[in-house]
Length: 226
Ligand code: GRF
Image (cartoon, rainbow, N blue to C red; front, side, top):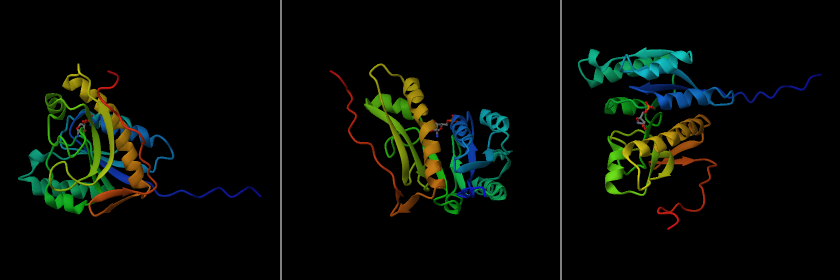
């Protein structure tokens, strides 16, 4: 008799990705789920901008898309309620903000508490908000990076799930730092989603605890060789 096939098929975590623009982080998630063993699957790509280039990436990958324009609503509450309805209808259990450029209401954030993640192009809690890379250069910081975190009402706050660090070089401009950081964003977003999908991320006293995670050893020093 043929050996019984291992039935370790855990159900994949269903995710909705919210975008407003380019969608390169969406692309990283699309690429990650091409791997059969990846434990999450995108069930909806939702944009508030009809012409967002990220929508074309989603369509190319055969993913369901929706456009809900904030301009069609009288305020943030009904707009966010419409987004929640679409996300619920798609059956998503996790919402990933990936360059979604609208502020969210407290009600939306509460509805998706610990099921709503964001990627930000700095080492939070430093450099919240916009124009991060310009400000990094202006301050002379020797390192920058990116953060995936659960979303809380205060902008760019919430339990940190994953971070990556990159050096800032003396001759860098904001574009150079942005490109270096973005490369890492495309690694840590799929990683963070994978950890959540595997059920390995718990929020304890507003800290994200990751079961079985190890931290790298050693340190980075910048300037390096002098
Ligand atoms: C990324 O830098 C992300 O960190 C920030 O918005 C940008 C979105 O880029 N939240 P993309 O649309 O994923 O290419």
